[in-house]
Image (cartoon, rainbow, N blue to C red; front, side, top):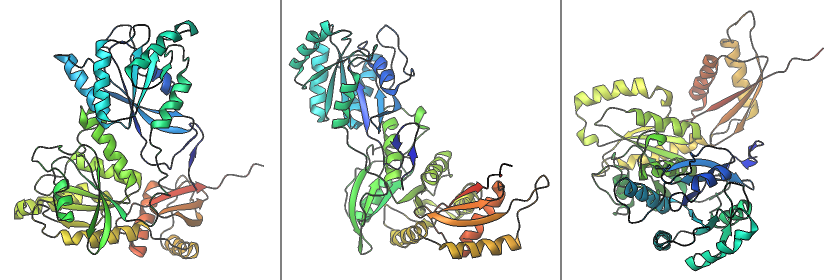
Length: 452
């Protein structure tokens, strides 16, 4: 059963949400419209052009569907200096968005800059919805209809300030945005979905090319060559797999710039679409904060994990010693993940990937019967009861596995359990039942006290 967030009316089990880029000349009301769409005042708005310089994304919902809104700076196609970099970011936003909302000031009419933007939008091939802004009353609607001459289809007369007409415009936006597939229902019985993730320039695309046996992805020594995830159906190890090559995750998403920002959004979406993530780490370099952040993202998303230390041909004996120490220190939270050493460039040991993936998928989909789980809990509590805290000792009354992929357990107790005791239960679960390659989630539901 899908989880349902009553506050937003959005089904939380859906896959990666589509991206809508909002573009237009400076001071046509883009940020005001963004605030109207997201229902709160977050985008900076001033009555002068050029306030928005960077692209900023916000979560939005309309009619129960979620999407990401990307606010961009004012777009002047032939700009120079700072304005040129703002325009470049707007162009990147269009390239990587699923659809575009082009905002025009209906009271000004069509300008040369608007027509230049339209030419770029046509080249992009992305679906475009035309918003005719600043139509604050019915008398101004005739000016909006003059925008038919842009050749982008029907202009939607709106007032971002007053909210007039924005509902109809958003209906048109939803009509062109792709619908995200529910995670639990897509591609049932199809090839296993594997996301290849890691920071830039660790060899993700080289690995995909070696698995495919041909060059399907651009590989360059410059970090960050890949921007959009690339899905590839590949025959490997006697079976077909769907590999998702992703752009490297660089800094925190909010700190990333230009196409890196959108690449990070796409990478997060690719992790959600996958069943197993192969985290590629450059074995010749120190395990970085970025590597650990990606691991945390995979754990929070509940995906199975295989860690591949690449560029093993560059790892000498001294580096191996320090790498072992780093694994003990930094990867202690994912000791359950299969680890393999490979050299993607030459193909050395990539045959070890399939057994590692199989082990991770088996662990991810492991189910324990309720009877077996409660017998396990009985033995565990008898040997190691929960410590007494403040004169009280919570007891585990009953438990069951409520989900596979990723394995999730629910414990009914007489009180809250210590975090350390929950980790102890997880550790013993892994010792007894395996759960290789998968995060485990334990939910505790303390019994409510009866009212007298």
